[in-house]
Structure formats: structure tokens, C-alpha cells
Image 1 (tube, rainbow, N blue to C red):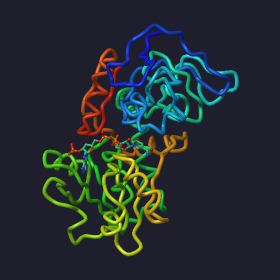
Image 2 (image 1 turned 180 degrees about the vertical axis):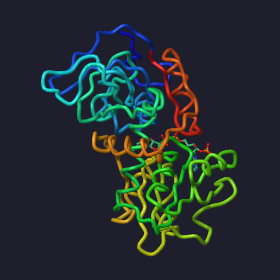
Image 3 (image 1 turned 30 degrees about the horizontal axis):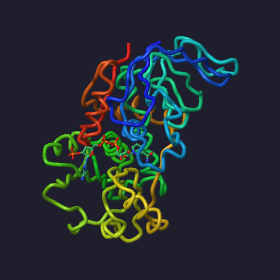
Length: 317
Ligand SMILES: NC(=O)c1ccc[n+]([C@@H]2O[C@H](COP(=O)([O-])OP(=O)(O)OC[C@H]3O[C@@H](n4cnc5c(N)ncnc54)[C@H](OP(=O)(O)O)[C@@H]3O)[C@@H](O)[C@H]2O)c1
């Protein structure tokens, strides 16, 4: 099969297309014929081996896993001996972040607890846009408990992969939602359902008078004192984004119980919950750009610039 492989850390040009063996699924895995993938910040972090401490798990000198890619949608081709929930022909979507990557390929072996049937309402490309970003938004928003309809919720980075799902999920819970983005994206945030928008190029959401019961910081560019200042009495924040070690350590060391760094882990249960919201018309992935399989390095280069408008996807068929 064709796959994009990398044998040393570096920029997207480090990736090259190669012929490799098809993976063989273990007993609790299925073999998926990948029809689409999406690109995530995790891909360029892992490609570059950054931040450096991540190499302790990714491989100290060179990458342990040669095929990148975490989000996929496709068709089940074969199932492992212990698999009863899926059968060949099923259309599925999945995330491989906790399972050794391998999505930028024509076939991937996927553990059954990181996948679900694909929502029928979505194309393969739309479905591939969902797992990493939407589950991160979901787990970030509910980290401090389920949202309540009376709450004021602020999403920092409302037009990114994670933010574009977070705005919709917060609205679906009935909360009053404020989205932070730049001038050219204000309309996009409104179209996602936000009640209020803040243009970060002209207005600092911390400096205004408004206070929030929940903040989801998908960018990770604010200090703990800033986030604390923007919270209402008893308010809580979850940070899913990463911009620097200083910010990451700041949240870990000074955030306390109310301001938490959240690392998402995709589960079948959460994918099924998202599928239900999609079927109910409450959630829909927005696609910024769609690339061909051969152009995966270009897709990663675009995402790495940090200004994607929702999701960047790749057609694999
Ligand atoms: N913790 C986890 O489990 C987890 C999972 C997924 C992702 N992440 C991390 O979360 C971060 C975001 O991921 P993503 O997929 O959403 O990235 P993304 O799609 O690349 O985010 C791009 C968006 O960020 C916005 N943005 C950039 N600077 C901003 C600022 N100063 N204020 C507000 N918005 C700003 C951009 O809007 P403009 O163009 O308007 O600037 C753009 O729409 C990354 O650091 C990623 O590593 C963490």
C-alpha cells in the first residue's frame, strides 16, 4: 500500500510517499481501507518531534512510528478474530493518536475502542474531520462538569479545528457562547452559532468587563492570571491548546483545580455521542481545505501556519 513515512524529525518535506506492507490487524483491531484523513496540530508536532520532551515517548533520536496521521474515515476491509461489533463493509471513523498513528496510508489497523460507525450524514472527508478536534472540544468543555444552559462560555480560538466544534457543542448545551477570533473570521464564528464575537486583533477579552463561567482556551496563549481575571466567581477554564512550554508549565503549576490543562483521548463512547449530535443536526464539521493524498505535506504546511478556518482534510481514495 502507499503511505507517507518519515524516518527523521523535521519539516513537512521530511515526509515521503513509499510502498509499505499493509498492516495486519490484531485480535481486537479492524483493518480499515482509508478513504479520507484529516490533518491535526498533533501531526506537525510529532513530525518535528516538538516539544522536545515529547521525544521521550515518540523516539529519542528518530521517530518510533514511521507513518503519521491520527484521524481517518474509511471502510472496514477485515476484522481481527475477537471483533464482533464491526464487519467488512462497515463505514467507520477513528482516531489513532493513542495507538501509534498510521492514518496517512491507504490502510490502517484500528483498535475497536478508538472507532465508531461513520455518521451517515457525513462524507468520508467530513467524517475524518471529526475525531481529534471534536473530541478535544467535547472533553475540554465537560472537564469541569457538564455545561449548564445558564452559563456564559468563552471559546478562545473559535475558528480552529477544535474551536469550530467547541462553539457548536457549547451552543448545543444551551449556553450563551462568545467566540474569540480575528477580523476576517468573525462571520464564520457567528455562522457556527456564537451569540457574541470578540476580535482579538482589536479587543482583549480579558480586559473587557464580561466574565465567563467557563473558558475553553483552544489556543493556549493566555497566562493563568489572565484566564483567572476573565472568569466569573466560581468559573473554571480548560486549556487544550499549546503555544509554549512557559504557558504549559504555567497552567500545570499555577492553574490549581479551576484552570486545567486537558489532554483528549478519543473513545468509541465519545465518537458515538458526536454521531448522535451530527444526526440531530446540532453538529457539523466545517471544511476549510481539502487536499489530495499526494499533497499531505502541503496540507500540514498550511495547518502549521496557524490560521486554518476549521478543518483541513485529505482525500485518500
Ligand atoms: N489537548 C489536546 O488533546 C489537543 C487536541 C487537539 C489539538 N490540541 C492543540 O490545540 C491547539 C489548537 O488545535 P486546532 O486543531 O484547533 O488548531 P488550528 O486549527 O491550527 O487553529 C487555528 C485557529 O487558531 C486561531 N488563532 C490563532 N491565533 C489566535 C489567537 N491569538 N487568538 C484566537 N484565535 C487564534 C486562528 O484564527 P485566526 O486565523 O483568526 O487567527 C485559526 O482559526 C494546538 O496547539 C493543538 O496542538 C490539543
